[in-house]
Image (cartoon, rainbow, N blue to C red; front, side, top):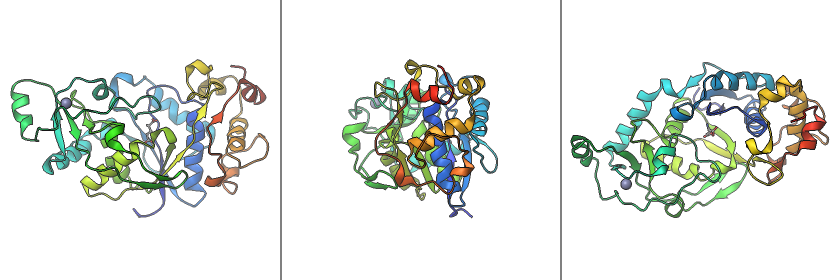
Amino acid sequence: MSSELTGRLAPSPTGAQHVGNARTYLIAWLMARSRGGTIRLRIEDIDSPRIKAGAAKQAAEDLRWLGLDWDGETITQTDRVALYEAGLESLKQREQVYPCTCTRTDIAAAASAPHVGQEGPPYPGTCSHRTVADAASLAAEGRPFAWRFRVTESPVFTDLYAGKQRIDLPSLGGDFVVWKSAGTPAYQLAVVVDDAAMGITEVVRGDDLIPSTPRQLLLYQALGLTPPVFAHVPLVVGVDGRRLAKRHGDTRLSALRESGVKPEELVGLLAWSCGWIDEPVAITASELLPLFRLSAIPQRPFVLTAELLRNIGYHA
Ligand code: GLU
Ligand code: ZN
């Protein structure tokens, strides 16, 4: 069963899901469902200080409103910390991580996926002389430390949508955090442990996460796990060309829903933006199954304007 085509929807309940998230979820869902695949839902809630009450439930409602479904139990990352701990242990046994006592913002931020503009400067390797055994004396001294993964190479990978990707990890971020000094897992480790355990064969997500993929490939290798294939798709941006955010007005799916927008109107707008239909007309996610083509999606970000939203009956 585990080799069966399986995709996933992985919302972070750090805020409300907006039109940009919806486009990626729609693509991910169609990618799996149009070929008879399975799709799983995983709530990525390990970034505890940023998690908003009720946002996980809201995300599931948003997905259902869009007409997307999923198989099996919903997976919640905070229930699975023991699995991530086991992953960390196995990295320690292989001396692939070292304790880092630097107090840097990248350690604080490591629990969430690094989206556009959230990649810090490369780690200078200050603590890389340390070995796993050094952790004992740091702990005895009461010094907090994070665990960093030793980057030895930058795996090249072929993205199903974006083609061949060469990211130079040493100049991008260098050794990266897999476990925070607060004693909790980082995004990169949790996502790899989960995607492997859940039998995910295809990961579809926004192209601002391309730089995370070679890091995740290093973790798959280090943990002896088989990686999925990846499809990174362009984001939705505002008229200023920046990733959709609050500054672009209220594009939360819950706001659209409450103002009476029909899901098929939004799905139609997104389907048109992806090149599957010629005009932004109402259509359901299921009706898109035979029309879906990953390669039809334009290579540039989709610019969401107030006018396009007005045309589906939404006045932000
Ligand atoms: N939960 C992440 C996000 O919403 C997605 C990360 C991923 O797809 O790997 O930013
Ligand atoms: Zn350090």
